[in-house]
Structures are given as C-alpha cells and as structure tokens.
Image 1 (cartoon, rainbow, N blue to C red):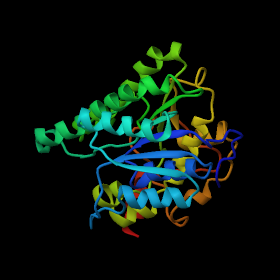
Image 2 (cartoon, helix red, strand yellow):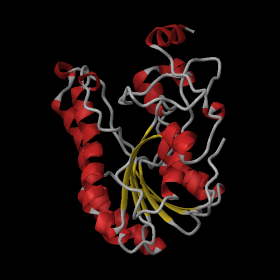
Image 3 (tube, rainbow, N blue to C red):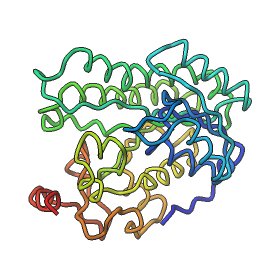
Length: 303
C-alpha cells in the first residue's frame, strides 16, 4: 500500500546515486509517478549478467512511470566524475532539489579476512562518496524551495554487536550517518534538510541475493517500494524544520504517513520477516508487524 502524501514532486529534480537498480531505482520511480526529473548517477552502463539493470534500463523505467530521466555514468569515488554529473544535471534540468545518497558497498567480512582494497572501497563509496556528492550538490540545493539530502544509512546506535564480525563495513556505513549528524546541524541556517532512512527488515535487492542470503532470504524480505514510499514522504516534509532525523521505514510510514497495512510490501507472506542490521533494540515495529526471532530465521532459511 503506497503512502498517500499531499505534497507532489512534480517538476522537482532528484540526483540519486546508485539508481540503476534496487532501492535507488524504486525511489526514482516513485518520484517519477509525480512527474519528477531524475538524474541517475551510477556506474553500470552495460548489462552485467550478475546484476540486473543499467542506467539506461533505469531511465526507461523512470520514463514509463511518468518522469524525465537523465542517465549519467558516474563513479562517486572520483571528484571529477561527480562534478561532471552534477553540472550535467543542472545544465539539463536547471537545478537540484533533492540529493539521495543511495550508492553503497558491502562486505561482511571479519577483520583478518578484510583486505585493505575492500576496506578502502567501502570507505570511498559509503563515507567519502556520500560526503563528496552532498558537498557538490550544495550550491544548487541552496536555490531550491524545499531542499533535501537523504542518506540511506542507519541510526547511530553504536552497540558492539553491530560491529562484531564486520568492523570495516560498519565503520563505512556509520560514516554516512555521521555525515547526517554533522550536515544537518551545519545546514540548518540554509534550510537544507539532511536525514537518514533505514529499513527495519531486509529489502529484496541484489545485495541480499548475491551477498547475504540468496533466494531464501529474498523471500523473507520486503520490496524496495517500502523505502521508496518512505523517502517520498520525507521529501514532502518542510526542509527547514524536518531535519537531523534517523528514520526507520515502517515506523515513519505508520506515524507520519498513516499507513496501517504493510502486507503489500512483503515478498512472501508465508515467510517470517528477516530483521536488517543496525536497527536499535528500542525501535519497535508498527502494530501487527512481527519480525522473526533468530530461531525462526534459521527455520525460514531451510524452507
């Protein structure tokens, strides 16, 4: 069930990193339904047998949803590529209203199994890339009437359990959240909202299938559309007052969007919902939403 918001993104320009597939593409298509303009800044220009989607297939889906798309090959590790992508977006659409830092790298390896090349990759994309993209968009966001920066990053719950087993990834991912903390305070006087959005459950994306749990965990996940609806609701909030928030998708949709039924977001209603990393213990799901216990996860994974 899609969130019903009064605000529309018609005529707004979104700059979204990593939007060739998954959550980034879902956010783009939700905005496109309003008639938004979307710059797709991602690396995949040619089809990859291991990964669905390219910037060109994403652009076609955005156009079909009612938006205007601009596919741009961009590796956010490189300052010149980010600057070019932002400049091209502004030259094409006239500005930028919303910056979505969705691109991310993941490797859930223990310290001794994490080589520095992988460590550097996660840091360069997750933390440094988020900082660079946000920084480069700032001059244009300042000219928007309701500017937003959104990080797809977790609440700053620094419990040791979120680091054990994958220290390098957690450092890089929490780096994105630290950008939220700092930029939200720094940009208050400019009226630029900076917020974080994180899923309560695993989301059915290529990362889940290829890195974490295969098709079985996919069945225990929600669709990317829940994150897209939550992001749309965030962009509908007044940027001068709604900032510095670390939001969990279903709680935000329930409390602010008035969504009561989350069943339509499930991949397989016969399977228990798998919890995502980094969700604080005191963050309770909306009424009627039950997240699997560890024992159920093991059972579900065998089904």
